[in-house]
Image (cartoon, rainbow, N blue to C red; front, side):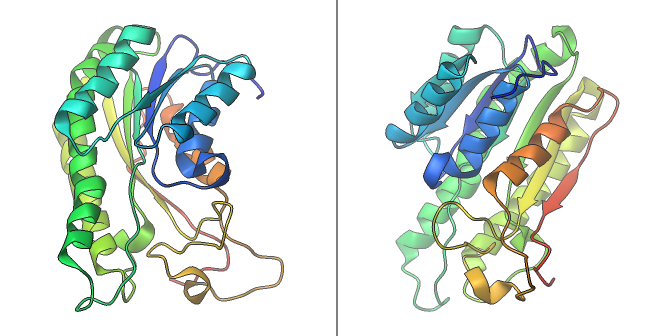
Length: 260
């Protein structure tokens, strides 16, 4: 891990989803923020994922904490934020990355699958953001950078919906709308709010499209592959290291080969 110090003296919290080898986008983002100098709290429902990511950051000389919880429960989301504050004394950056992709025919999808998708993709983000926001306000007013960031990760189905991905598109559109509304609400506080939208991402297995469409969503071009988790993490790191007077409201991170 190459340290560059852009976020020295700050603390971040990153929620992780299903991920793959190396923790997927959440793991790559936690690593990127730690490399920029932030102390990082890594949050996931499965104990092995945040532990592995935090362990790798610590072994490389960074500061990291692993927290196992289910952010769809408001009390557990609050617990994760409290653990971050207890460990590092502050919170400057929150990345809401935990989410799931549901791919199934509209009429054949079990209702509980819709509920699980909505719970994680929307309610989890709401609970984590609400628990973290008071601390982000403090960081923006008194932190070393005098700015704080809330970054929401939502697939590009918020702009280009695909068949059999209706529930994923529903939640992605919701995240984009929430992000813009909250950006406007917090505009005077120097708490910046941004959405980063990944396209097809290689998480260590078969490439997953923005709605799980995989290769069907991509027009093959010679030498072109899916986005890597590190590419999305690099975009997030770029967002949160801008000078305090600049907000990047929305970024899409697509493979060159993707159409639409």
